[in-house]
Length: 351
Length: 239
Image (cartoon, rainbow over all chains, first blue to last red; front, side, top):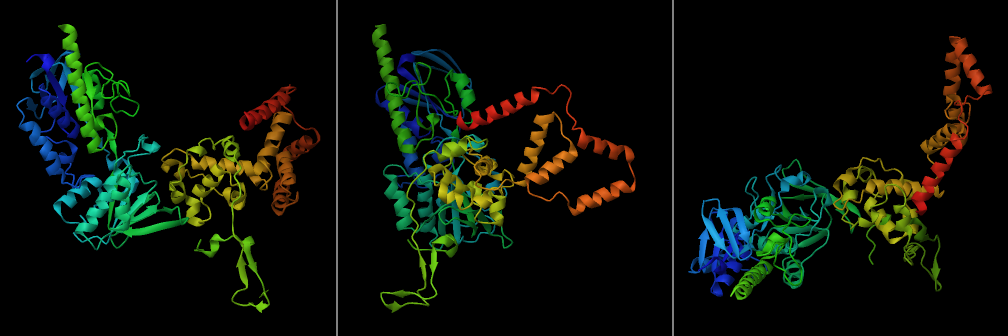
């Protein structure tokens, strides 16, 4: 097969895996390059628990996507490798990998994803200072392990507070976007916590609740009505520790117009999605543009929605901005189909 | 709606009767307190723009009511009626009458800027407090502060004479702020000064009262300066 029959897929998360499978299903070859030594992306590497909205365990759902590409003769996989150089143009790219291999491909698809917000950047909320302040990914790992306990002394928490918009919707730290999925993930997490530990009460501190589309009743309402999650309209000012070792969340309950200082046993940061920390490097290596927040820019919103600013290079999933897994998979399919379609078009003109 | 706290009820809405008879039935005692309902009947649409025209108030439109300013507020820790988040809400909707109920405490902002540091939308609430206090003062809704009286006298002398004269500033400040010219500490000050008989200094002070010192060739400069200050003020509020 020539370069024109091959598409290079960078990143093996939900978006990249979906793109590779789509390409292979159309009889073309896909070459996957993944910088980690395992496939599956954030849901696998960060140990997500049950996914929204299917309720299926991440390792099962994403595991199925991984075995689909691993068992496909049209797909070859490079793990622990990065693309270091890209030469050529649409229809005829040559990519050099960090392991010395060269890949000839007619098109490139970037499924390079995002980076979780690092809570250290909001020190007032206690992450890194108190053992019992966690992020949603850490809490998901706890759910996956099947026990809800305070990391400090192993006791079962009476109360868990989830703080929304940590690293999202915050001009102070240059994150002027909504990370889209944290509200739903948090309401889902609240239900999972209650399921494992019925004696634990979960409180969600919010500015707005954005459980978009069908997530409204399946997650927000369900956690409120069936799982007794309490929703408090307050943005927490700081998390401190009381003399008895419990955490204290301080803020103003805006609906009651009164200050609150409430003891909690675990505080969870619903961390947002940052642009991939490697995006500046990705932008240079692939010669593509980034939009103003630092995510990968798109070519044209309506007629080339998965294209980047460079012809022949496509993008899908959370590399373009905060995205949920279902949409990332759909975008992976769209990018794969569009890349193959454009290659056919180029072959037709050439013959 | 249920009433949760008595402090949330404005005193002017509480009607108390020593003896109350309704439809011929004496209900004095347990039923002698009535509360008139509170209904908001309109918005003053341009109020937000007015506050924005004052320095510091420019970003008030960005607020989404998360309450970060209030819960970080130094003054709020002393007095829960000092609630910047609530006032910003009133400013944005143009609920001027509600805002006026707190007009006597808005100026108490100590400008610690904790709110400005924590605000996720960069509203700069400290600036909004300052802008609101200035609006209240300029419109005569609150009495001028002592520091404003002092600033005005100081500025007046600068523009008029090109310089200040200490005694005149003090006298002018006392007059503007309604304080007596003879105060115990001034008398004491005078007594101790004359004890050492600093003839030169006393002569100089005496001369200054008679012959008001003025910067040389100040001439039209003061007029131009006054004109400029006026134009700047107008541009800020009506531009």
